[in-house]
Length: 498
Image 1 (tube, rainbow, N blue to C red):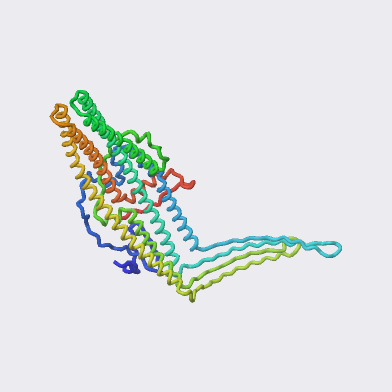
Image 2: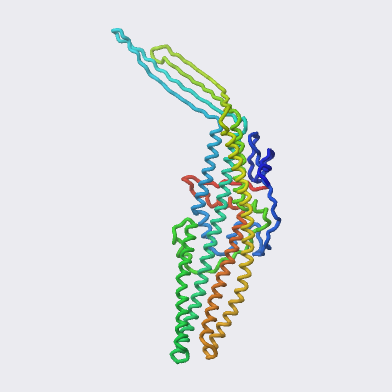
C-alpha cells in the first residue's frame, strides 16, 4: 500500500480514541492505513492458564507478595517513567504555546511626564505641566487556510504519542522487573540444588576416603572425588555473583540505590507462578493493545498534519492590527488637553518568489510522512513477531521442562544404583562419579528450564502488551499523591473506544 493512497481528503479515520478534527483545507486529512494481516498466528496459541479477561494487571495474578511490592515500587519510582511523564508535560506546554501563539495578541502600555517651565522675567514665575497616556495594542492573524488548525493537530498528536510511549515504558519496566526477579529466584534454586549436590559429593568423597584407608579404593579414585567436590565449590561463587547482580538490577528498575533490596531478596524463595493467561487474540488486536504501535500511528498522524502546516505557507497571510491610546496633558497651571486615538489596519503578506523554499518544505513534510508510515508498519510487524516468537519460545520451554523432569528422575535412580553397587564392590568409582556428575548437570538443566519457562511466559505477556486504559488508571492511582516539579501530576487520560 503506497502512502499517497492514505493521505486523501476525507473523514478522519484515525485511532478511535483520538479525534484530530477541524474544518481545514490545507493539506490532506489523515486516514488510518489498512494492513493485510493474517487472522491467526503461525504457531498454535498455547493454553497457559484460565483466561481472565478482566485481568489486565497480570502481574497481580501471582501470590508472591515480594514481587508485587517490587512492581509497585517500580511503577512509583522508576526513573524512565519519570522522564516519560516529564515529556508528556513538555508536549502539553508546547501545545499551549501553539494555541497561544495562534490566538489574538494583546499588549498594553502606560506612561507619564512632569514638566516645570520657568519665566525669564524678574518675578521668576513658573508653570507646571503634568500629563499621562495609556494604550492597548491588538494583533491577530486569522486562520484562513487551516495552517494553524494543522499546527494544533500536530501538537495534540505529539501529546498522545508521548502518552503511549510512557505506557510502553510501563510495559517494558514491569516486564524487566519480573524478568530480573525470576532470574534471581531461578539462580537461587540452582544454588540450592548445587549445595545439595555438593553434600552428596562430599558424602561420596568420604566413602572413597574410608575405602582408600582400607585398601579397597585407589588414590586415583580419591583424587577424582576430591576434584569433583572442588569443581562444585568453584561454581557456587559464580551463582552468588549472578544473584547480587539481579538484586542490583531490580533496585535500579525501581529507582532505588543498588543494594536497597538485598535483605529482602537474599533469602531464597520459589519461582512465582501466574494463574492468568495473556489475552493473545489475533494479530490485528495488537493495534489496540500495544502502546508502541499506537505511538507509531500517532507519529504518522502528526506527520500528516505537518503537511497541512507547510501547505498553508503557500497562501497569503492576513494580519489584523488595532490600537487604542488615551492621553491627557496640562494638569497643573496650564489648560488640560485630552486626546483619544483609535486605529485598525489589515495587512496581506504574500511571498511572490522564494526560490522554491516553501514547496521544498512541503516535500520534506511529505517524505517525513512516508517515513512515519513505514515506521508504523515496521512497529506493527515487530509487535506481531514478538508475540509469535514468544509463543514459539513458550511451547519449546514447556517441552524442554517436561523432558528434563523425566531425565532427572532417571538420573537420580542411576546414581543411587551406582553408589550402592560401588559400596558393595560390584562396580568401579568411575560409574559413581559419572552418574553423580550427570545427575547434578540434569538437575541444573531442569532448574534452568523452569526459569526459562517463566521468562518465556513473561515475554508473552510483554509482547501482547498492556491494556492502555488500564495502564492509564494505574498511572493515575500511582501518581495521584506524587509531586512533579512541585505540582501534582495527573496522567493524560485517553477516552476508551466505543
